[in-house]
Image (cartoon, rainbow, N blue to C red; front, side, top):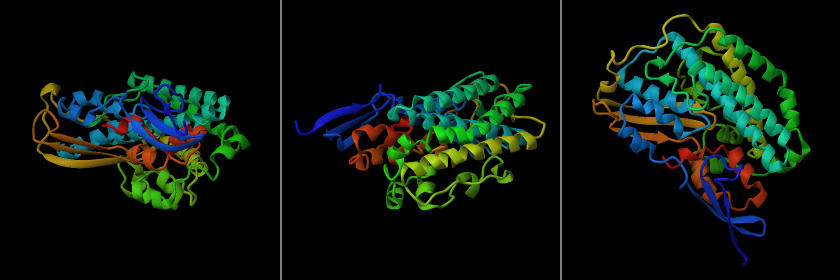
Length: 368
């Protein structure tokens, strides 16, 4: 038996999402691999075409379970572009607050994910404890911890609860005060550096070949291409923040960019809380007949900068109560499917989980 077949996921803690990577190994080196998404939520695009516009609000967050809010935002923006809805000013800032807390949540989850495969569970426990605090904030705002169904066409579902700003500032101050501790627990730790420096490469030519965006691209080509900057939505053009980049393509560079983005997200949320005006948070769209609401004929492509890169919805309306066509551009599709098959081979078996984690793979985006 020169070659053995092994499985990574869906029960493996190193696999993010209910998918399985089938690996053929020779010794401890992966020779062939392919993704089997059979355990996933599937068929989102066709499912959206069979649901009412308003009913899709509860379906779309499942396209990426750990970062559902980018789906809500892209879906809402596409509908608003077709229906020519003007979102209230206050809602723009609330949306940015939600999106940046979502970015913090998934970056902490991914960073903590380094602890499992490397045996440094303290990092994982710290990161998931802080992520749980973010979920508490989401629960106070939206009533839900995971699938928030909060960003809707026309604005947000309801205003921020009284006193939530105090909870936000308290968490952000605490997280920022422990930032250097996080670095020491993780990428400054020699054990983790030995596993992620000069390995799990994503070279510039591979970035262009696969169409990788987000941190995977910015950490390899040293270009600050971020949709919040180059194609601003909400009110990101009125907020000051930097886009971390690197000119090296190893796993360490990608993780370092994520950590730098944590500080940027903290700054963005604070600025939003200062600049956010009073006023309405949603424009009425259905006049009490949500189940019969129709969107005018037209089409639009709306995209946002998720933690993994460009996340987009192409949507067509025929003037009815359902979307006529929906196409989702999953941010982690290139590296999550094509990358697994073409570039995971050659990796050591014990680094397969680190490959999935540092590449930023959210499995449900792949089989939509």
